[in-house]
Length: 97
Image (cartoon, rainbow, N blue to C red):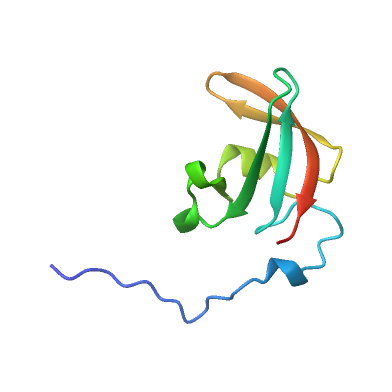
């Protein structure tokens, strides 16, 4: 059985330090959010599915939290829908590192 190979001919490398994202959360951004119920803060970098590693603070762009954050700005409140219920987070900071 032959392993499938991914076609990377159309792949693009994104340098988030050079993005003009106008202060919005975009792919590659590092975001600090605060759970409004618990006041706990957490930092995540939004990455591709293959790079995601929750223990290292990297979440997939397709995850519910990332989908809620994309396009938002510092100070915005987002609601993340999960099977256990909805959680509201405030965006504390956004960095492009």
